[in-house]
Length: 259
Image (cartoon, rainbow, N blue to C red; front, side, top):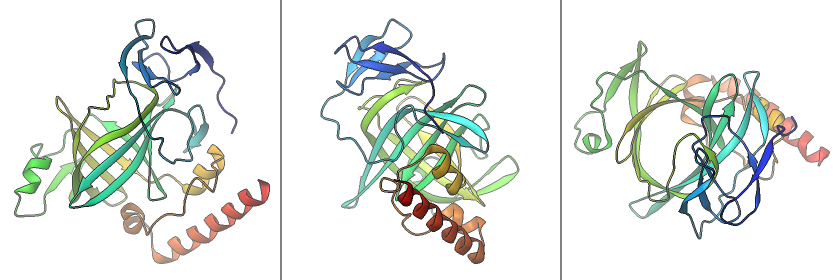
């Protein structure tokens, strides 16, 4: 699908031309050239300056348009994340996406897997599950949400390593989050805590073939998935996974031949 038609504005810090993305609820725009964070609701005045950011590898670029379940979404923002624990390092990339009819969501790229995430206003029960309590828990926690039982999968702490584009909130390089992930079937519930708030998010796996084709993803920048994603492993039978991988291989070949 072709990129969405946009209007542009000039960064008030460096003067670079930037695409205006994300609809009327965008709070800030982080300049791709100088790293200035601009207040989208107050004449793009500079409210922060991010420097020495290393761009993470991702197949999604700002302004790129594709469909999820037949709904067009535009990539409007990028946040790279880093997590360190016990001498190991994990990284992933979140892309905020926007649809005029379906609002805001996220596409997350990690180890070649891509997940789709939306916030939920529903509060799980019990609501007291948190990163700090997980560390002292003697049992694998479970919570209920929407009539489903979600079981503990993982937890950790992370911080941004890169910020670019438009967002419907105000991100900062000083942000630190704590998260707890719980799984039920093909859904993952993330309980995410920052310094001043707690949010609940539901993630699922979009159809990878539709994702690659509709967003026109570069097969060289979307690496082969590492292992089987926990949501894929739970949801699909071995035969379904085999047939899925055959179809993806054929899709990758078509992209390579067209390049």
